[in-house]
Length: 344
Length: 217
Image (cartoon, rainbow over all chains, first blue to last red; front, side, top):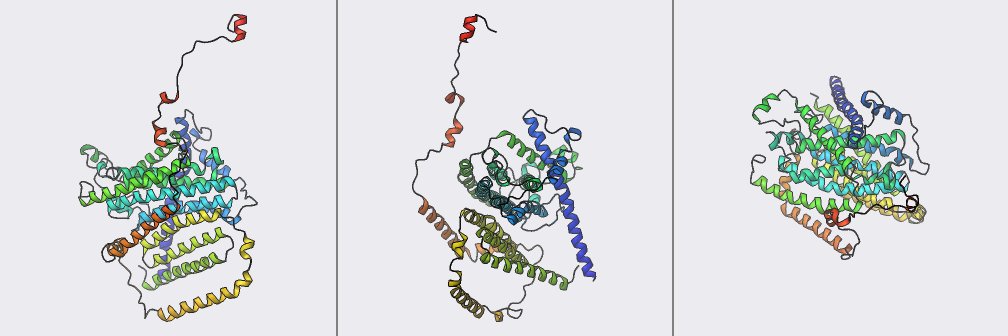
């Protein structure tokens, strides 16, 4: 009986922790949509949303309410079950990954040994939502979008996987907390420098994996209307939208953890600045780094035109994969030579 | 801490959930008429098998199974199957004619399987339950050590076989360099303004109407 109570208590604690991750995540997703419209608005000399609430701050909630009250239209010739289940399959992995993400020393829901692999696995599952949505809609545009997206994600996953192989070689661990701890020692000890080519490959592949501009051929509104989610309306569409933004935050977090030292202070090892900033909690640094990457994503979207499909394939297969393969060999040599300060 | 009895039951519950799912999804793969659905059930089978492997403390293999098979191989599979236009009527044709053959073959296979790995091969007396590893035991390191020491040659030979398979597949489908009309990206990037635009200075000209009236409105 006592054990039963204990088990239920453990379960409740896990649920409470999950909620403590999910609620800020969904809020961040809501305000990322707002930030995107504001940032791109200013980049294009517009104001962006400014009507709902002060500075338009309640815009995400207004949008959400509007989408919730809209009718979900299920096309009559569609595959009903798969059509309904596709948004769930897109959203589920995007949320499930957060179980292994550490936010600070010890501040993690599940500190598992193969955290990095788990992240890679979950991000690779997200593609099923897109493919199934495209197929189940029984529409030419949606189907084209799904096919494009499948080819693109499979291609870039390889480069992304190799970039992450570099990280786990350098850290000698797949535990995300340990990877951050190995980068301890200040700005120049972080892995962005010894793994610079892999960092760039990871980041560009991450943009491609999240189907963001300039890799948004899966949506390509000027060619195939809205790609895989053209038949979705109301909250079903909103879930795809939320999954995309949750994935954006995810890839930014992974980049911050793996290449920019996670929650470590950038002023470590600098004479005056280090002691001046010791009061800042680690999670603030992590959030700042995540915000930097998110801003980069918005900036990229506002700057670059969409890639053509053959250019995407060429970049993924003929440029990124060779770069990562070569750098893995270079990295192996560097680790064997125990080059300071990273592999000493 | 929970006592051992409780942990065992929790593990058993998980085992039955995952193995039940695997059996259900596995049979749905062959039963479902729609090929896309069959592939999706195959995905579910992989995921439940991965759950079973996780219960065996083989977390690296469990996650790699999902990563490689579900995340890459099945996506390509789905990609192909979705583009097929299979006529269900022709698939169903001859079902009753081949049914006796199918049933006898499957009975034979089941008999062979049971006689080879029947219930007598299993049980705690035959295969004792493995002792659980400590929390900090790294499955990945253990696997890597085995692969790169004891099983180095088989591992390398398998890698070479895969490489040969890649090269063979490419050489079978590669039909020589085609004269493609696709633009060369490096040339596209290097284009400068002067290559494409010529700016000319022109004197403003009057239109016919303005010439007649003699003034510009």
